[in-house]
Length: 218
Image (cartoon, rainbow, N blue to C red):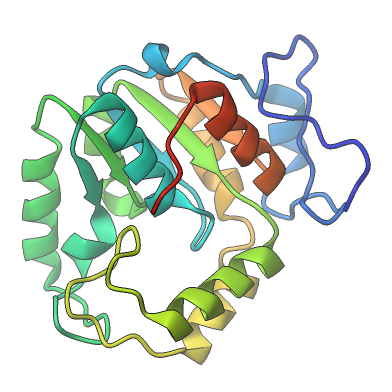
């Protein structure tokens, strides 16, 4: 690991948190580094409708549950809307998924994790704050392999009755196809008027849990 990894914290000089293993995350562009300020907002400043964005297996579901418990508001996992229960993550018809999403964002209090860029405009219009998290793609791959092998029904964001199996398509998705997704999400968020917290390492995310006194997921 690198020796000097800045935490998610207030910054007057656009401090940048590097990759968990001493590399700069491929998902963060030079433009993002020079223009974005990675702020440690107070949890209260994010309001009662919080979106959690980030690449697959970065810890979005676990963070959403922790925020839900801390704030006593519902946690909504968009993967559970996108996929049919009691399947190996079979995709739900798009129109049905969009209806479920658009109904959920009308709620007054929620923490909603998941990306689905095509539905992001109306979600961000309803949100009061945002958290973007990412980490090394190798760490995220390890998390995917571990969680799929264990297939625990109690894990955060688990699909009811899912018959998980390791998929080469998902490995490719994590390692290659979404390498730059955090750049896209960061740019989208910085064009909104939302208070934003960005964490680009697992170490920084752990610091976020500590500073906000979030409960660990059990």
